[in-house]
Image 1 (cartoon, rainbow, N blue to C red):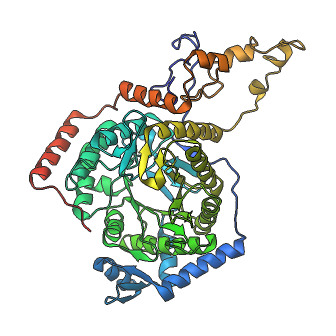
Image 2 (image 1 turned 90 degrees about the horizontal axis):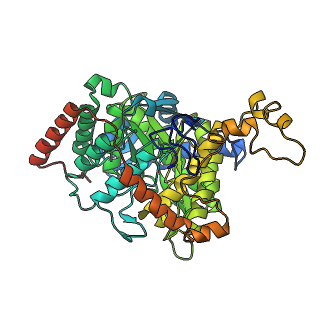
Image 3 (image 1 turned 60 degrees about the horizontal axis):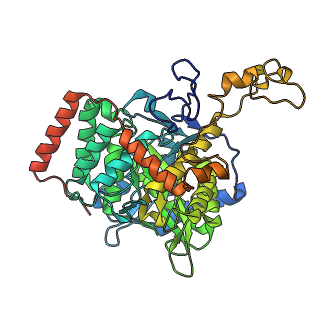
Length: 516
C-alpha cells in the first residue's frame, strides 16, 4: 500500500487477507509529539549570555528597517529611530514585553477539523522543501518549475499525512507574478484541506489571499481574524536588516490574526559570524526584532520563532547543510526557543545536486539535529536539493519514508499484557519453535509493523528477478502512482464558484504585482 494515504484501510501489500474482514492498520500522523530526549550544545549560562548579547545588539547596534510604517510602529513603542539611516534601536523592555505577549501555543485551523494541529513546545510538524525555483525528476530532468510542478508537489504533500502543513515547494515560473498568488491559492483550496501557505509579497497580494481563503472556507471576517487559518515565512536579511515586503508581511499577518514563522537565514562565515555561538546570537537578535514588530502591531498575534543556520563551504563560499555545525546550530536555537518558551521552527535540507547518498546523509543529519533540538516545525524535511535551488520528486518520496518512520516512533511502544503476550505467544511456542502462527502473530500480522512505501525487503535473488530496481527509480514509480490515483478532498461547489469569480474579477482588474 502507499503508506499513510487519506484512505485508510487498504490491505497490506503481499497479504491475501481481505481488508473488509481482516484488521487494518490505522495510525494518526497529524498531531505528533516529539518523544526524543532533548540535547543541549551549550551550558545554560552561555545560552543566557547569548540572549543578553542579542538584547544588547538590538539596543546598541540596532536593526535596519526599510519600511517607514514599521519604523513608526517601533518608534511609537519607545524605540529610538533614525530615519536617515533607517536604523531602529529597540530597548530590552520593549522586546521583553513582546516576548511575554507572544502566544506560547498556537491553534492552527486547517480546511478540515481532523487536519487541525497545535504549535507549542513539544509538538512536531513537518513541511516538505520550500521555495525552489527549479524542479527535477528522473524522467523529465532538472527544469525551471512550472504550474504543473506546483500542482504535482501539492498533491504529493496532501497524500502523505506526515506533512501537516503546505509549503511553497516550487515557484510556478510560467505563471505571471501578478497572477501567481491566485494560481497557488486556488490550488491549495481545491486540492488539499491542509494548513495553507501564502507568500508575503506586499499588502495587495496578501489581502487577496486572505479573501480567497475566507471565500473557500466559508469564513466571516470575524471568524477569519479569530484564529490562525494560514501562515507565511518571514526571512530577515542577515545581518540585521528587515526589508520592505518582509516587514509589511509581519504587519499584515499580525494585524489580521494570521501566523508568521520568522526565519533568519544565517550562514556562518558569510552573513553571520563564523562560530555557532555568534551566528545563533545574531539569528536570535533578528528573530526577536521581527517578533517584536508582530506584537507591537497586535499583541497576542500568532508568531513562531525560528532560525535556519548552517555554514558555508569556506573553499567555495557555497552553502552547506546537514553538517555538524548545522546540527549544533539547531541545538542552540532549541535552547534559546525554550528560554523564551515559544514554539519554533528549524530546517533540514541538503546541498547535494542530485538525490544520492550525500542528499540522504545531509537531510537525515539535519533532520535529527532538529528532532534532538525539540523543533516544533521542521521545514525542508523532504525533497530539498542544491541548498534550496531545486526540489526533487524522487527525493521527496525517499525523505517521506524516513519521516513516516519518525512518526511511528512518536507513537511509542506499548508493553501491556497483550503486548507481552504470555498467553498468546510465549506459552504457545515450544523451545526451538517459531512465532509465525502464534495467536498474537495471527491477530497482529496485518497491523503491527510499519509498511514502507519505498523500501524493499526482498532478498537479493528476488530483487534481481524483479529487475534490480534501486530506491531512486522505485521512488519514480511511487510518485507517479500517487499522482495517477490522486483524489482531492470534497469542496463546496458554491464556495468554489465564488472563489473562481473573485479570481476572474481580480485578474480582469490587473491582478496584484508583488511589492519590493
